[in-house]
Image (cartoon, rainbow, N blue to C red; front, side):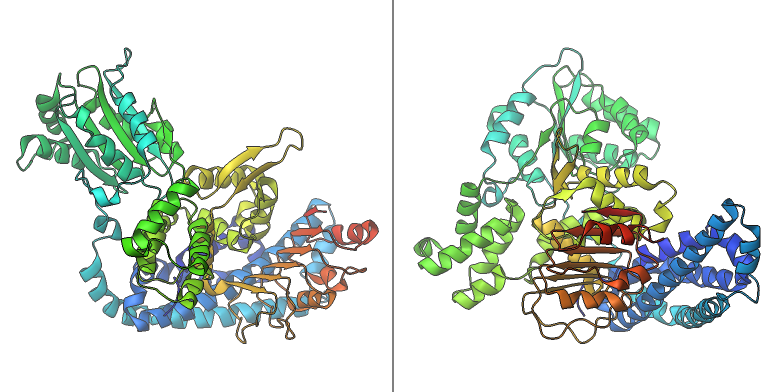
Length: 616
């Protein structure tokens, strides 16, 4: 069973569409109110079990098969609702222009759209029938799922629980950052008794390792007392955090439950002392919750410090860090040294020239992430042939046993996103890897694919963009004052995560690559420099299509893509725009770049109802 199955996100989005007052009003006019309510009820029935089903499907093949069936019908429901949305928008436009007779004709029996109405109604009944059947199977799969949930209820993050114990083998390449933190720890802040130093970076960057380095620094052994390490993670619970700290200093079990009593007990142990506390892996973005804890911690002697590690710059702002450290990847030189130590034994430190070059290319793919370098290095230690090294270098998503050590920390960030943000991030799988991303263009593409964002449009898109920047999924943001464009990058590993989450929804075919026979589930398709003999034909369900550097005849792929929301045509040597584009009623974003089409041809396309964003 390959790849994650992320159905819950789409189910939530479909549920939001079904709850739209706009859609409900239209359903009454078309007489499909009961059908929509049936669909909404079926969606609600299965929503509650999806999180557990997706978490444990790898251990249970029947659950996997059930999710696959559910995924297909939910995709169809989403496409159907978008078609109904489009017809509803047409009706609303007619009403807004006062064309009452046109509205009357629109819903009358004589209207030429009557066949369309019947087609959509029949499609909805078919979707409902399939979804109700799948929902009815829920109980059967729940019974076998419960076994795995009970056995595995302890979340993955618990397995990564950190401590202050220093592991010399894992500490590498952070001497400069450590010295800076130590200097800040010894600095006395005249305004605050207790100040906060934050270490910010994406998963796998070495935040915990750096905090541990500072925590165990020899010259600070007599400087702070006591020193306390708390692993926080997703569950930011003030009572639990206080209990851990009290047990650390008292060396006994804390049975106090009341917050006020816990505060009194904590301050009894630490009042007037110059302490050092590490709060590792904070996710909480609730300022009130932080202030509740901070008020209790603010009892130490002047010079007391808190080190907080987090993946989010937003958290750093909330905790009012005086000295935030934005952790970057290791330098190319340090990356190679770390990888070399893991990949080659001392007697093999000078491998043959061919493998050496491949190894250096693999190191570049790691982007300076210590966790990626260590994991891949350890994996390569037992691979001796050139073919084995090439297989790792050329893998888009590195299929190694220890991949979870890299991807799960990134996936953990993803799992904390809202359903809309998850969908926006997954969409990024179609963006060409390694290319600069233009903020405005990305937001317009999100809007094209997410109708429920339409009411807030750019404002909501800006929020999602900022959230992805805060957790490090988008990085190196640059505002060009001359062009006015904001550009950013996406780390290769983060891009791999987007493709991994998209799973069968994403298809990339390059050069002479072969198009799979079955692409029914594909939503995002990229054809880059494609020169294959067999073009994709079954593109009916594709929502985003990127065609770049291909022969003009490849554009025929568009003709079957009835549900296309966004279309990219780049470096296509053709004189005439394909007429199929005028039939893409869902198209909301069109990008044409470095093609042979004339301005007048493009202007004709831009007036079609579907195209509301376009760039040349």
